[in-house]
Length: 506
Image (spheres, rainbow, N blue to C red):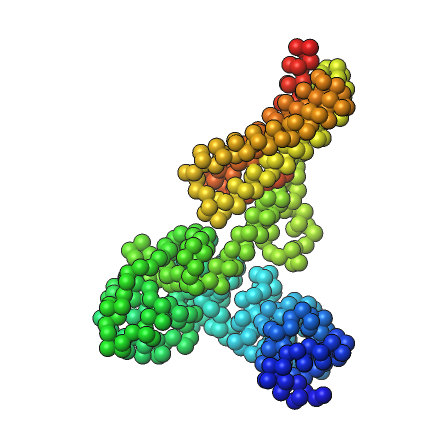
């Protein structure tokens, strides 16, 4: 069966027949057939049978990469341009990263202009900087012009000041005005994240006039799913969906279809506020206003997803006691990873010395009942695990807005009850084990200690994220290693104090 027959079956949606045909093929045979199909037919197949064609798709990527390598070696840039124009830009970016530096620059230069801008915005800052050094001023000018304003601002904000100034000089007058405006907002603010590419209309226009304005200026805007209504001073009055204009009578005034029900964020808010607002209200874009309510830009959901990923990655790093990386792990060198990890580990070693001091201080108690030593790992690990669980729940609840700082009392009260319940359950099991291993006295000591350690560890894990947030620090700093180390020392003090009291009473 040839390519045209397969394309005919796809158009007729004969999926069962196609599944049977692909079952009889090897991954390589299926991959070579997929490469012959037109892009639309290939996309249909991937959508209808993603699992069955997984192996063939990976094989197809391998064959495509080999062909790209051959085309680069032979200098077939026009054919390469046509091939890559059909690829999703994340896959082109991955291909670019796999190339050696000289080939990477040649490959990037071969990309069609719109695709080059998309691929460039997908790359890590380090790779972007390296590419910019290799491009001519004219190539850089075209690239900057094709980037979305928010991506352009992110690039300029990450570069050293001298390099930023050089690139600003390559921008057109309009792009330069946009860049300087966006760069005027604090780093990490919504103002740096927003784009000024939106469509705004006036309340006194008719719906027909507004639609004509949208047709005229909407083609090159970030999104036209939402249309913003502003007054003569450009103050935001409303945000209306495009549907509202389409279904309205063209003779109606825009103000007649306005409901004044809209949400916005301030340009000076942190980026996380834009993330929360879009998530809470399920929006595709949110308008950004200044202190006087003037519309200065919008933040779209694709930008928010990037921010959410960055924030989640940073929290993961902090929670593992690693200073957040400035670039991807793939691009980080050994020395960079060492510098990010060693300060916390040294600090935790210092805190860990407290545990050694506690054991030394209660040496006589430990000698009086050597069986106590058997239970130290069990008790300390249980406390650390409990504290880490509690801290994880609190950090995530704070990050998602599920808990606010003012609700700390309610959260601590809840965790107090949970800690008592967990401590009682684990304490009973540990007491029985203690009786079996060392007698009634040891069982009583380890049972009471387990209850106390679990309760205290749970409260520490719940309270520490709130305390750090109150101090203006990222609550993710309440990392698992930090919680574990603090609970280790606290747990040993509790353990030997209870042991001394019980053994002394006996």
